[in-house]
Amino acid sequence: MTAGTASLSGYEAEWWAGNVRNTDLSGTLLGAHLCHAALMSCVPGAFIIQEAARFQPGIPLSEQGMVFMPHLAGLGIAVGSGGEILSTYPYFVIGVLHFFVAAFCCAGGLFHTIAGEAKLGDYPEGSWAAQFDYDWDDFESLSSILGHHLLCLGVACLLFACNAAFGNGLYDPLVGEVRQITPNLNPITLVGYLFGFANGGWTPLGMAAVDNMEDLVGGHFLVAIVDIAGAAFHIINKKPTAFFNNRLIFSFPNGGVTRAGICNSEAILSYSVASVGFIAISSAIFTQYCDIAFAPEFYGIDRSGAASIQLILGLNWMVFGGLWHSIRGERLHALKNK
View 1 (cartoon, rainbow, N blue to C red):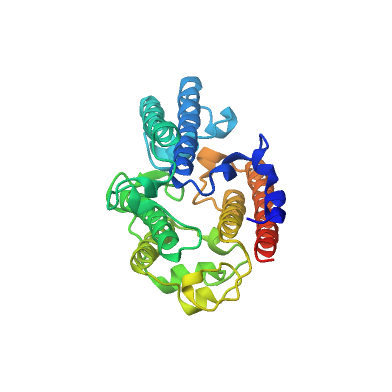
View 2: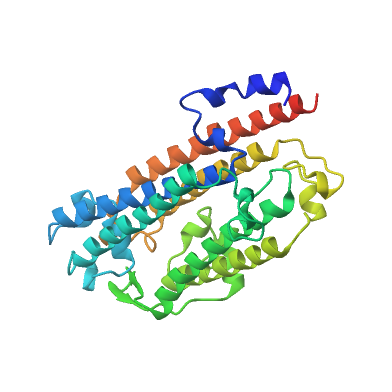
């Protein structure tokens, strides 16, 4: 690393630097991610139990300031006709299960942070852990990790859709009952939502214009299939495609001629942060306008407050997080190649 690059990266020693210290330590970074996952499971678990404890029958969840119970109620958990909450015990159990998941993730995080190898590649060759080591300049390792992330997302999406179609079902605000949903698997209809074509016309709401549970569940099946197919491609594929490698995104020495200009680790973080922001913005539109996904019985009619918070956070992640890391990556790349 040149003196200029070292100077640019000097904030790694600051208290707020966070996980940038672990950029090249795959094992320690995994530990940090697991500890984050533990926190992300513990906090909603605590809120769910707290909300179940103070629930008052006969008063809409939105008027009681509930945040997590509406999501579980939308899954049809202990819900009767008209969105009535029949029992809070299942919510309490779900909250406790979140604590068990948090404890499991925390144990793994502490192990990889304190006792495990700093780099997964230092484990015995051929071991399961060593397979997930990575090098920011190695397309094959990064592609494999991306594939496994997509696989987890695809399986989670598929479980949701299968539960809606064949299991407990979902609460349908159009009929006011929990029912199993027969998904609409017509790809023309489902893909049309991406371009704003819905309900026989065009709408700027795009996917948020969905007005029936059949299309909503069918869309989850489609997303699950795309994610799992993408996972298989990235896990099996060993070289970047020409189209990918010629984009102004990454630079892989083993990928041939490239026009990329962003340091790989910063590029990945930049696009990841921007993607989270984009998802938050999309969720804000759904929250505000989609009564099928956000049933008024659980979330209330006016959801502008929750939608505004997601919109503000999403814009911040996209503009400040994504753009900042993108610019920093460009500067690192320029200094590194002086």
